[in-house]
Image 1 (cartoon, rainbow, N blue to C red):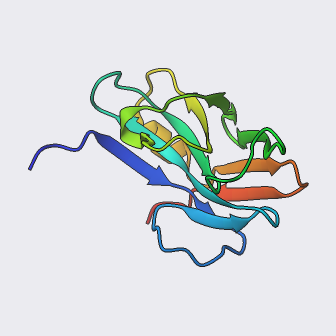
Image 2: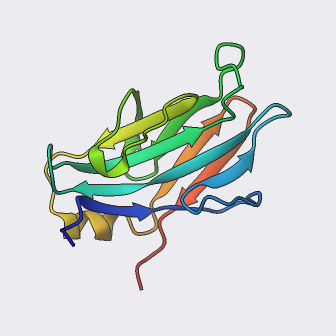
Image 3: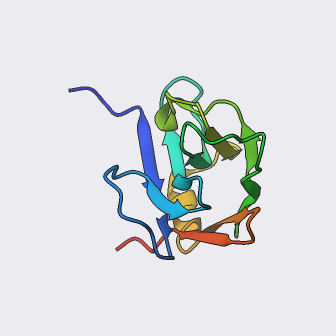
Length: 143
């Protein structure tokens, strides 16, 4: 067994989620055509670029047309500010099927992981949707 390429600390959804088989994504109703599958959290990468930050991955039904209907207004952290829409993610949080996937990221300047883990306790990632909903994902205090 080798060392992990990094760590991912997941934020938990505070609302009502739909039943879902895939453990790492939260399923939330968006509209009649599609549900959203969301994974969000803090990552610390040990290999390649050696970066850390916050990321949000939002997947929709492969048949859903993004050109017809926008999904996201804004993704932000209550402590660190706005996450930017990107085309690819760090290795630790990599998404292999990017069809109908939106990815947001906020890379931190090289910071001490212990300090960051303390700072993200009770942080909230807010996802503002175009349908008027705001989704809250929180990082609970470590026990």
